Length: 110
Image (cartoon, rainbow, N blue to C red; front, side, top):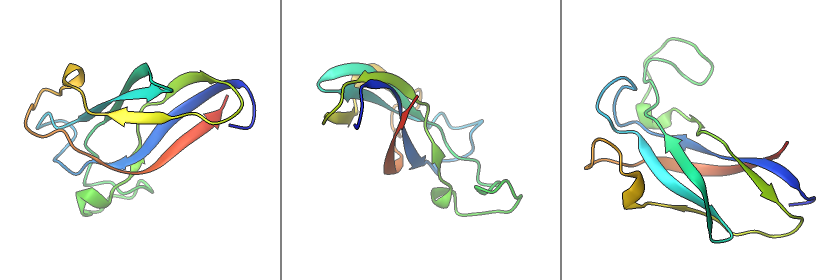
């Protein structure tokens, strides 16, 4: 990062494992920064009847992208190691399915 400060860390993701209000297939992962646990990143299923522009139409659910919850992290200027880990301590209610696609890490200075 370019300067010391507080930053939001979140992820752009897709989770097409069924509707948001059923199936209990929200993906969960532990977020660590420089080896220290920061919190839990949550990746709920994305609604298949809304696209990213809010228009009502049916789309392939794995093509619907959005952002996870953000974790506020105090970072110092320079490089950091950011890790997203699958851990038993954040198992979802489904137990069998806990998956999401990720394509972007976003770090926003507050």
